Length: 399
View (cartoon, one colour):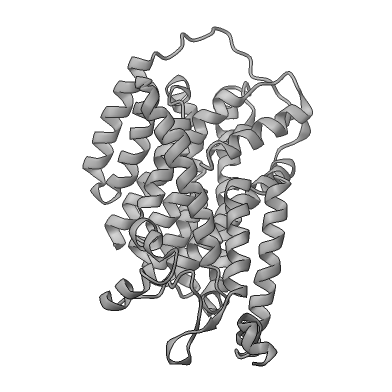
């Protein structure tokens, strides 16, 4: 027995074309880097740590399968025939999870339930005009990226799916790409989650570039403290809004239902369900989402000419949304006669609660006494709803 027969991964690795070999090696080390940056909390650890591990494992663990084809024993996302699928579900250890929870959007809905548990809809009800105005402006990337993607040669479904990255909501991108561009579902989802983690590092620089130091540190004067929104009011709003949005956009009903289920459970304070969804579903789904995204980063899947376009368009979508959100912040600033901090605009990009934290951190650096988190969370949560509505519109028109 030769050395390469004993250590099959090494022998199989170099039996491929040079471009695939280079890509696999790069992705193995990129996986190491993602784990490191996740562990340091430079990137989102809940996604990046399992994603990095999965990415390095799937690109290292290749071997010869049937008919001398190269594959792995982790997952095959390109299966289409029913008999072939049933066979591989008994061979690849993540195949059942992929086909029964990932490729049908279930895992996205479970994450959305968890997001609902985290969201206090009261922030939206306390500042409805501000939240809605900023959220609408922060959809700039979701709207403007579409015609740019069409000009770059993507078909309508793929253009819409990559545009949803501008909403900075991972489960939404996953759901939209499954419905609109299933053939590009894997690279679009990977690009989206890689970039969403980069919003931590990129948006603070965008804030500094577009908002002067004096305005970044501006506190908001509150003349009269509003009475807090009761749980009953939040509950009524959530139930009615869920029904109305499902009526208007039934194609996105799974997303609306999942999000508002989380909100309703939070407001009814059913402790067992809060624990089940908040500690159970959310972390289960987030962990396996990260791991699944990692093992989908197979070099042979990602070496597609369309992937480069997706990388550019995904970054552009998030940049435009960030700029749009800040413009929305300036609009509110002028409408309220300068009694507002335009930094809050970045929170309209609906990466809950990350962009709200980015806004508060940027403000606190200039003025530790300025607390804008309640306004930021209102815009943040409203951004989730507006992105879901736009997803419903895209799927209705193009799906």
